[in-house]
Image (cartoon, rainbow, N blue to C red; front, side):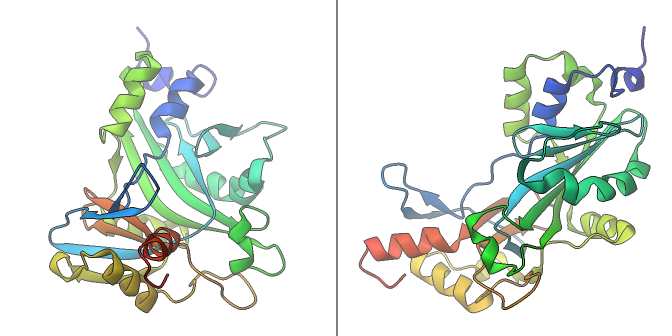
Length: 265
């Protein structure tokens, strides 16, 4: 019988299963989106204790997946684009070019029967229509925003795709809490998405209009411009220190909602 480590070697692993189990889960909006018109309702995500506020960078979600045998995969949010040793990688959005050297450095995190996934936002260049807010010369940057550790993942490789998706959506991935995440970033010299503040949960605004003002007051422009004048930020991510509760607040959602209500957006 093969050991769990052998089953997760890049040469033999089921890449479809690895892709599914390492995808980044969807993050809810801080205020609930109305499915009828995309506007925001007044109901919001409940936090307790300290809440960490970080900038939400408008780029593309990317990941570096480090396998137990020291090999790695680079992927976008939806698909795997490159495996260590490939002669040709999928050039989608410049992700592989931006992260190949990072992935080589992260190989040292390989450990028996464990998969570690580093999630980074790749931005600038021609990544999104908002790239002009970060660069005037098409520079490309990246920022670490989460790290997941999947212990004993061998058993998941035998699951059907639907079961893996359900496991992921139910919070099956173990994400590093704030301090461990920052320690890992410092260890590898990786810039993280900017930390804006840490506030008590009861200091968070609960109304849509007040949340819009909260965003505007704390993040009038991006903090991660690569060159030239800083443009608008996409918004903010709110998370508990242990990363068990997380939500996003995007400027465009609040501006659109307030315009529809006849307010100022």
